[in-house]
Amino acid sequence: MERKRFISLLGYGALGMGMAPAAYAGINSKKSDYETCKSVWGDLCGAIGTVYKTDAFEYVHPVRKTPNVLLYGDSISIGYTPAVRKSLEEKATVFRLYKNGGSSQQFIPNMDKMNATMFQPYLRKGWNFKWDLIHFNVGLHDLKYLSGKHLDKNGEQVSSIGVYKENLDKICKYLKSNYPEAKLVFATTTPVPENAKGRYSGDSIKFNTAAREVLEQYPEIEINDLYAFTLPQRKAWAQEPGNVHYNELGSTEQGKEVARIIAENL
Image (cartoon, rainbow, N blue to C red):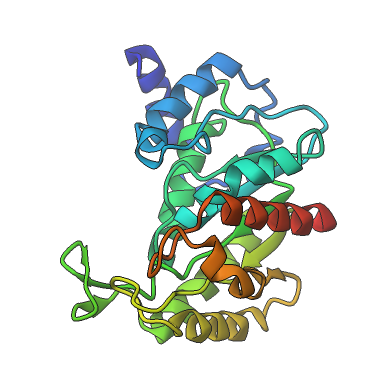
């Protein structure tokens, strides 16, 4: 990042940290500059597109009078992002989080970092719009077991059911407070197959049940039951036995379903 742009970003961040785009969109009406935003987005994402071998992290610029949609999720969402964009082409501008969303504990810090990096007034000539819809999921990284940084069923689970519910409740409050005009859609966690490394089959059901208990307090949040949609085809769509990820067909079909739900709620 050029020194001049870095200093500008640092200065705006110091003045406005903690202010959501919905709150400051009316304060700063300057037009977003494509080249500035694209450059900063590239710095923010780093090499993640190469790591995942996907164009899901390619820069997307807001389009005037077109709904702005954010996809927040883990590697499953990374897989279906291109299909969502293709399905909603000319109907919505589909952005995604700049990284793998990880566990529920990481949600708010990840959102805050993207806001402080990409939006005005933090970034001069940065994004200056409000989200119309946020489609989000956390769970697959909460239910996994780790020894250090490695998947291991003999290790420690990232989040207990209780911690997951507390975090999800905080996420819902955060989204409603910071993006009051956005339609919120929560996607259930996709199935964990038998013999998955560091994860137990059936835990998706437990965590999805817990998520529904939290979301009962927020009836305005739509639920996209991606678990139920995927379950009948999990073997045909799996990259390989025991892998929680999906092949091209599976990711494409998931993306079409996510796009359908989004279109219904815009």
